[in-house]
Length: 49
Image (cartoon, rainbow, N blue to C red; front, top):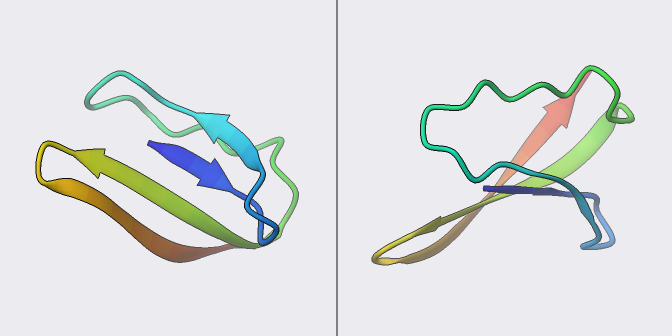
């Protein structure tokens, strides 16, 4: 799983299934959460407030 900023730069990565996503030090605003699975890649918009 990769968290990206709106410019597509990687902000944080998690490689462990079931990991807690600590985003306390990530700047607030719109981000893209990219999930990679065996069937492909899915990207979702998330807003950190």
